[in-house]
Length: 176
Image (cartoon, rainbow, N blue to C red; front, side):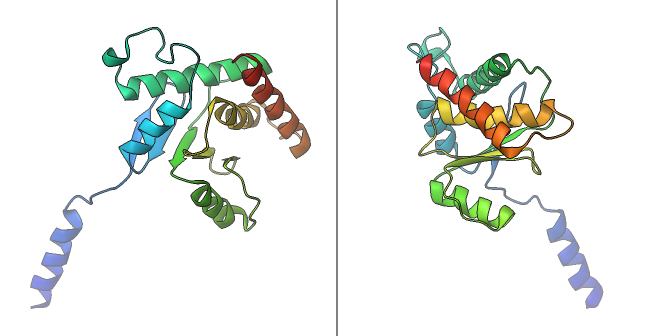
């Protein structure tokens, strides 16, 4: 009887587990999201400019390709603005539905509640974004933190980090 119970438990352990998370790999980052609707919302909120579809007809562009291209283009632009060029290693962008969920993650990681709509976690090498609040400037700001973190062997003071990220954000605001 014990063997039969053990065997059944073993077989259930081999079954694939249904995961509610999805991923999108770009050249420079990996996006994680629970629901494809989050990717759609992210895509519609992060606007590159007038075309917003990289010069192609919208009907011909898969959302995954559009998001991937946007993320890589924005990351490259952030590197240009900062003049810090290094290939990101294992950068993850986590799309969360709301500011409250971003704050929950921050609270769990840092045991503080600052009220951010997005943040970069150097320990996780991850950007966490509230998709309902994100825009190109927020994404560029957080990507600046990631670029700075990747570029320097010794981390600059937090105030310098923030000033550089704000500078990048202003550059994106000015180019709209």
